[in-house]
Figure (cartoon, rainbow, N blue to C red):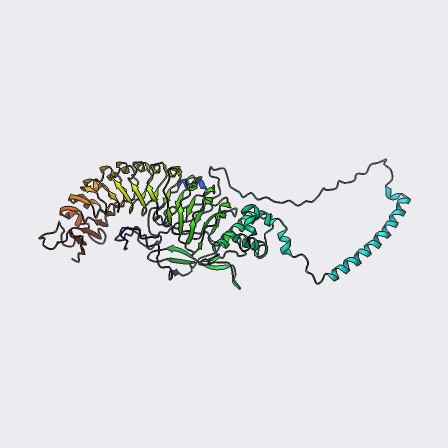
Amino acid sequence: GAFSEDGRTRRASMNMRRYSSSASIGQLEQEVLAKECSISSASTPGAITEDGRGSDITKDVEKTSPTVAPIQENSNPAQEPSAIVSPGVANGPDLYFGTDGPHGNGPLAIAVAVSEDDNGPIPAAVQYKPGAKPPIYQNRRFRFYTFTAAILLVAIGMCITLVVTSNESSNNKNPTTSPTSARENMGIVEQFVHIVGESNLEIGGSPHNQATDWILHEDPLQLPPDAENLSQRYLLALLYFSTTERRPWRKCNAAIGDENSECIFEDLIKIEPEYVYVQKDSFRWLSERHECEWVGVYCDEFNQTRAIDLKGQDILSTFPTELAMMPYIQSLTFSHNDFYGTIPSELASMRHLLNIELHYNFFTGEIPREYYKVYSPQRINFAGNELSGTIPTEVGLLTTVKGFFVQENELTGTLPTEIGNMKFLTYSRWSRNYWTGTVPSEIGRLEKAQELWLHRNRLEGTLPTELGNMKKMNDLRLHFNSFSGSIPEEHFNMTMLTRWDLYDCNFTGTISSNIQRMRSLRTYRVRGNKFYGTIPAELGRLWFLNELWLHKNDFTGEIPEEVCSLRGPRGISILEADCGVVDGDESPQIDCMLGCCTVCCDHKGFCDTNEL
């Protein structure tokens, strides 16, 4: 839980999804992003560390000895992919990938050009007409010429037979045209040239060249040029060759030697306190199975690729731009890998892209502006990289986005007021960057917002009263900034808050008695501010309160008995206050009855666990 002085320690988060090929894209508008919790069902939702980072962990977590769970008993390579959903780290909802058009215009289908065979004209039937002249074959002269011609044809046929026999004998030492060469002349290569360009294929040993060679010569399926999935299979093979140039994936690489198509895939399901994988029976990439059965590839009922999920597979590579050529992909999840370079702008051109998750890699540069103009995105997650630059005003064009995550980067500038135009924004994380300026009042227009992380930046000024309009807010983190002023009374309208972090800022004023309205509050932390006055007894009406930080302020008086009555394993488990005695002082700043406070601090900043 330690963090550096500038609060820049990297943390990692994780998300999982449940895919279904039967639901339409239109249903996505009804899906709500899940609230933050641990990725593992066994972990405690909303677990909070002392530094306020919750269930997040250090990005550079040791990955050399991860825990690998045994193979699931009822796993089946052909079963529908499913996973536990975790909103916090991955930040989002279940997404369902279907085949209906974005406006309910019916199923989408991949249009593949098919070369028809040239069968030539069909001869017409000869009709018999009464009164016509006798057939020519009854003419005597015709019979003579026919007999002579037949003899000549027999002689010519015998000569041709001798020549052919001689040629076959002389050519026994030379191989005939191989099937490989024949496939190269079937128009397959020309299709790939159209997809990736001739120059890429001409580079020997390039991923494009390797994928072409595999389709032509090594692929067990040996697809014909008119196969509907030829381009799709080629592009997925290209993805594999592009991302294994420097090292293989964690599991389920192409078969080597006597390996068959089956493999044991290790699916990342948890990252705290270490990476935890669960083993699943799967089919490896570049196997004879249909590419929709390759692990991590999810298709619809038409065998069109809708999603690719290869999180946590130790992929070290730049990101292949050619995936943008797969027209019906709706979700790309490549988080927790080692991708580097810039985020390709080409992916933003994918018209059906709903979900892109590239978080916790090593991408650099700015976020391409094209991503603010994606057709109808639902979730964009670029968190935990090394991205720089600013967020432009075009972010307001993302009116369909429900989850937007750019935390833990090196972004600068001010927060655009246009954020308020993101009317469906439910979960957003802007924390651990270098934002300056004030919190835009326009953010208060986000009536659907349930999570807002702005902590560990350089924000200043007073908080806008408009934040109180976000009445569905569940998780609000504003700590480690340079705010000033008091907490507006309007903020106590956010009665659905379960976590409210205001610590280590410069807030002043008193804690309003309206705190009693926050009946769902579990975590309330106001450490390290300039709050004064007495601690309101109304805090004792927060029956679900679990963690309360009041220390390093200017409170006076005592911890109310109503608050202490909530202490216990089913109530407040952590209560920190300025109940410590400084050397030379006769009494503490705050009186706390025996067994109430768990940590007592003094004015010098020294805190000690109360063992009583």
